[in-house]
Every structure is written in structure tokens, then in C-alpha cells.
Length: 359
Image (cartoon, rainbow, N blue to C red; front, side, top):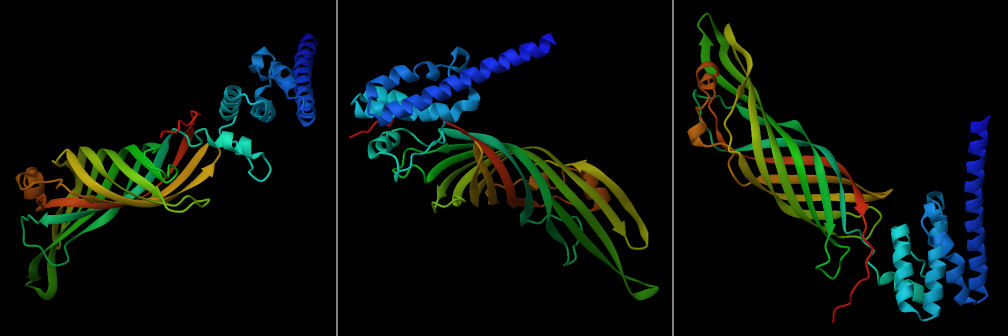
């Protein structure tokens, strides 16, 4: 019973505080409409204190925003620009997504709002996606004579990591340009099929004897892609294009290999380590959209990465002797390209600030 009474008491005190500040806001509205602007600061002072000191609660944040708007308007018409700036700064901190309505709000209030930074200073979040990697062979090194149908094919790999957006203020069109960076853990995979024609079976001249090597190479790398994005339409979806570069550190590379032979025992599948250049560079182009959702953006992007550096060298072609002797496979010299499809959610981080006009 005592617990119930205590809950009722605290609930009553909370509702009383809410009622008092709501009533104070109604009084301030009426005072503003009557033109008694000097009275508004003293009326709202208590409710604009932090919630723990009796001000508007977190649930009443929109009431706090309205109160700060009335206070800013009163300072504007009282020709007190410093106090008006302080009220607008408090308003933007209380609700970074508040936007005035030029068709309803006074032009002086809209101008005051526009004198403050609207865009977030940065956005940070997470990124998930898949990629499809294709080796671009510069020099094919072989142990055996390969048939014409030998090939390398893309395979799906996964990636995840952190993303960072920094809206740029170096350009006049500040809402158009964004510097974007990521730190990703990327898996890159592709398949290898190499066929060797051993001729025909003497007992069956129409039967070809084929040795087939099948492998899946999986690389794991830490990637640091950096791109410059340009938003080319002021639409709800915020479409953009981007260009940049990526530095990748390959810390693991393995090949799952198997060799089969027609009418003869094959070599069973096993995983073998490969030597790869640890640092690789790529150029990037991308396009995507950014959808405002909650306190941030959902981003969908398609990106093409073109490798500039070879991930293998002639010196490592026969580095793994088991591959050469047991599987008949030698490492080609190749660069690699990839197409990735990824999604991100990035949170807005605001720091409202008066824009200083430089002459």
C-alpha cells in the first residue's frame, strides 16, 4: 500500500510540474500576442531550466522548443540581438531538426534561424554489404597446359564496418558535398577452374581424359576507402555520386583446392595459405541514395573498385609447393576489381553554431 501511495505521489508531482509549465507556456503565448514582450523572459525562465530543476521534462521537449521560439521572437522585436542568438542556439540544441515555415513564421525569425549552422558537423554509423570480386590476370603462370575453358569467376564476399560522413563547408554549396570514409573488414572471394586435356582413352577414342582443378580463393582485408560525394538533386532520396580511393591491408588469404582426374584418383580438397601483397590500392566510383529516417540517414550504395596494384607477383607463383606438385596450380599475377552493394545507417551529430560571415 505504501508503494502505491509513493507512486501516486510522484506521479502527481510530475503531472503537477507538467501542468504548471504547460500553463506557463499558454500564458506566454497570450502575453506575446498582447505585445507585452518584456514579461516573457521572466514568465518562461523557470520552465527553461533543466528538467531536474523544475523545467520542461524530456517528454515535453516540443513545448520547450515552442517556448524558446516565443522567447527568440520577443528578443527580435525588442532589438536585443545577443539574447535572440542565445535563444535560437538553445532552440537548435533542444531540437536539431526544427525548421521554420517561411510562409507562416516572421521573416526576421527565419533570417535568425538561417544565420545558424543547420547541417550536422558529422555523421557516424555502421555499414554492411556484399561484394563480388573478379581477378584481372596480367600474367598467367601455369604448371600444365590449360584447356581453353579454364576461367576465373566472381564469388560473393561479405563486408562490415564503420562509416563516417563529414559535410564540407569549403564549397559555397555546403549541402552538396560530403567527405565520406569507412573502416571495413572485407572478405573477397573468387573461383578458379583450370582444365587439362590428357587426350583420349585408348580403349574409347571418343572419351576425353580431363584433369580438373577447382579452387576458391578467400582474402580477408582491412580497408580504408575515402570518397568525395556530390548530391546532384535536392530530392527526398538525396541521390549522389562519388569518387575516391581505397587502401587495403590483406592479412589473410587461403585457397580451398581440389583436383579430379578422369578414371584416376584425384587429390582431395584442402585449404592452403597463399602469399599476397599486404598493401593494395584501388580507385572507386559509386552512386547511392540517402533516406532521412529518425536521427540519421539510411544509405544504399553501389560501388565499383578497380585495383591499381597487383596482389601477387611472379616470385610467389610457386611459393606453395603443394599447390604446384599436388594440384598442378601456379599463382597468376593479377590485380582485382569488385562490385559491392551495401547499406548503412549513420547518426547525425549536431553542434549548432552561429555562422560567421566573412567579407
